[in-house]
Length: 379
Image 1 (cartoon, helix red, strand yellow):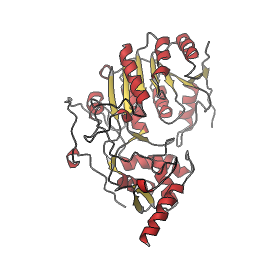
Image 2: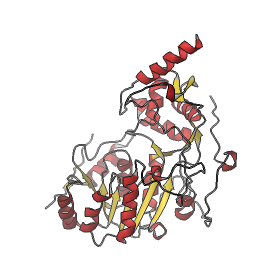
Image 3: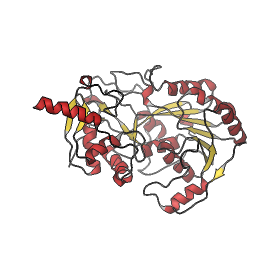
Image 4: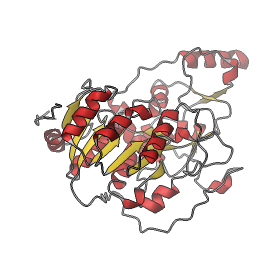
């Protein structure tokens, strides 16, 4: 039988970003869905639609999204258990988090240690404990989800973290929830999981984030820019730099996860979640500089086809237009992103990189290849 462990508390210059008006983008289409207008909650308000306290299992929970989500769930009074392999601390104090809030969270969070790929253990341990709701933050393949569904036949809701990367590449943007998906994408496992949930007849909800950023981000999104800004280096950006992309703050994503809990309007639905506005690659570099208090950076454009970077990734974003409509989440759920881009990047910098913490050491080797060729061409 699995064991739940309760952790006892211990003390411990102006930038112009691309507007969101889609009429400015050649070839853009609007999503063909009409939604009724909602009265928005004031900024900072957080409402959970669930009518009662739930016994919640979070698959993952000790990295990035799960850290912020689990705190919100505990604050709302739910009994929250994190299912992890136990390689990372179950509770760690967040930058800027008051001691009292951290102690309260640590005293209430529960832990179920195991490997989700050990399907027999998953089925036996989850069926023994029983849960009302599952938040699956780290699921990548459908076969990892099936044992969870088998173990919890009376599950009230399965809430899944998918990805906007499941959409089929298109010249018609932004991506909407009704758009074609790509069964061969590198996120095909998440797409297969959504299909599994639909076929099993469970009450499910799937959120599809675009690029996620914020404090403790383990993907080199904003961190990639911050390393170069801090070192006073030029920022190499592929091709023209006007490629349009979209970032959503992790705290806004966590809030969206809360708002689908127990929400009938979220039943068997998919929602894109990201920031309100889109931004070019060049605009993102300038936004990072503004947010962190650095001078506007020198930007160097290059043609990726002229270089052999080997297995190294020279730029952290896919070299294409990639953004999604969040209108469905706004109108159906009444969800609104609280962070604009510069404000969100400042939050990330001040609570993480600006304190000297980051996930990956700076690697400028591909930059040096690009800048070296640029200097030769200039001379």
